[in-house]
Length: 116
Image 1 (cartoon, rainbow, N blue to C red):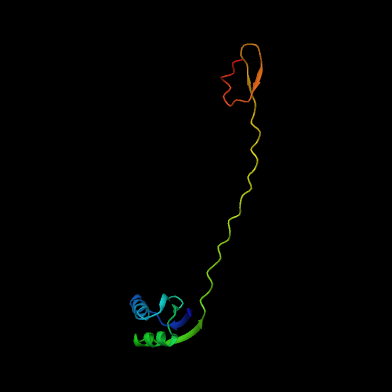
Image 2 (image 1 turned 30 degrees about the vertical axis):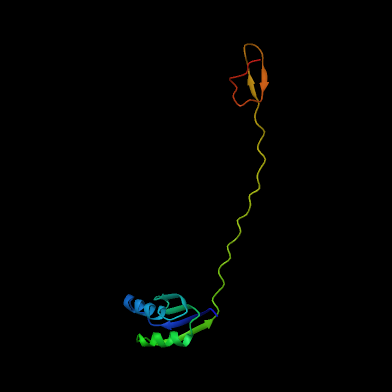
């Protein structure tokens, strides 16, 4: 069963963070490892036993405190894009062609070719 284990760990430098990630990612069943230095948390998602994660973290030389163990959060739902209603095309303007002294109304888009 896939679960998410969140541990509180003192991550003081980039080297410590790399060591933790390398040690925990080597465990069988680990899908995802996230280390947040600002919050001081190590989040491991996968089929791995939380006890094994704690033991590996302590082998690196870090004190570990369990924050939570449980199912991973559901992926965020993507909102469906709203379908825009098509507006009817506005009526095409009728062009007035004036050959010589006659006014002729035509539906052609090109008003220069009105020969009758």
